[in-house]
Image (cartoon, rainbow, N blue to C red; front, side):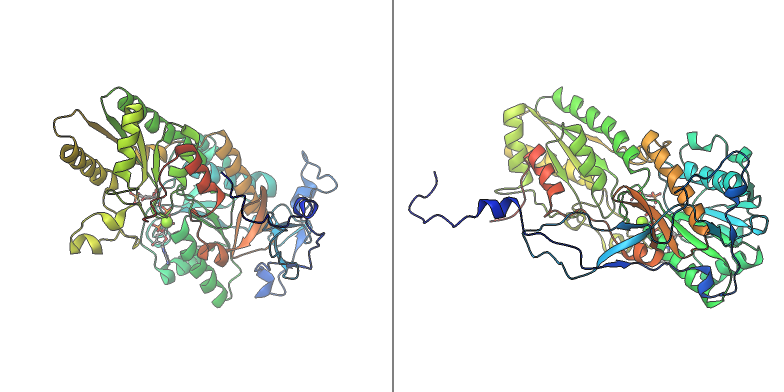
Length: 470
Ligand SMILES: Nc1ncnc2c1ncn2[C@@H]1O[C@H](COP(=O)(O)OP(=O)(O)OP(=O)(O)O)[C@@H](O)[C@H]1O
Ligand SMILES: O=P(O)(O)OC[C@H]1O[C@](O)(CO)[C@@H](O)[C@@H]1O
Ligand SMILES: [Mg+2]
């Protein structure tokens, strides 16, 4: 009941509903590196689309240098609104009226690095189609097996005919790998093979490598444009709305969660446990939980949790088992890593790219759950079914939404490179495709903020504990 002895806070309802008028003081356009920065004499020419026999650019088709996209679109006007600080805006992606490459002189290279992600083949296909059909480029090459492929394998020639049905296949037809980043060898190979456009598709590690390649190319004053196309099934690349393939992975995760639910429901005191990808971010687990509605608790790397005692996981599961007879638990692979006992050798283990190798949080949780039940309820029936769909959620073709995303992303990259931009990344910001400095993307992380509304949604659909010890 409300405490009526306290004087009521003065309220101004009208002001609460309609905060004071405001205006943006200024906008700050993020500059993009351009080939003319190091080669001021670099000539431009009208966009070849002007002469396309089948396509007649309409008024407004070309994106002007003043076309921008706001980084931030949500504000709290009743708080301390930063009216006088400039608002960051990015160049809008799309075709430019003038291009800085002569199509017959273009030699484009496309490479895929890091782990798989639904949609990789669509991006490759659309880079090839965009370059070939829109701009008339005829020399397009696939670099195989990731960064190491620049200096260790022969590039393969790509054309619309070669790639025509690639978007229907999962994986990457160019192959990928981790490790093998040798800056000098890579840039020497780019130079020796005469590539002047380099399209690098990969995740956070790949983007950090791409920044180094871009800087080295600038240092050598080469007329070569470099662009990064962010790929990560974990959705851990910052600034952009989301990465391609992520939605497909979330959709695939539903099958594992549904199976866990059926298994749990069909057992006495059944727990269905699903481990989903997410090395340092829990976006897949979060979104799979939100969309499934069968999940009782979601554990991600960005949050601490504990098993025993008041407010802990076991107490919560005990209650759910009592109420419903079953429970479903989703855990991201990077969650709880600090709680799993490991040897000194395991602490040091790294993959070829230098990423820490994780222990199996699902296997560990399963055994902890079984020990707990045997301790607390000896002789009572209890079942834990552990499902680890790992590669099944990423080794699939992209769904329709991701396929169209990949297409627009690849075409945005092609338009940007043809316009002479370099050291940039294309990606959607607030629903519009933008060009962002490569370095900014390489540094930005996209972690789940457990203090914001999205995590509050999870709490409101699962009613799981906040794991704050009191
Ligand atoms: N800091 C870095 N500098 C240069 N190259 C890097 C760096 N980090 C990673 N790389 C290289 O980038 C490539 C891909 O890196 P990594 O294996 O970490 O995957 P990723 O791009 O982060 O993709 P994902 O994690 O989504 O699978 C590897 O060839 C790796 O050697
Ligand atoms: O086994 P691989 O191919 O190294 O990839 C596994 C990792 O790649 C990712 O899919 C993307 O980083 C992670 O979720 C996962 O930990
Ligand atoms: Mg990564």
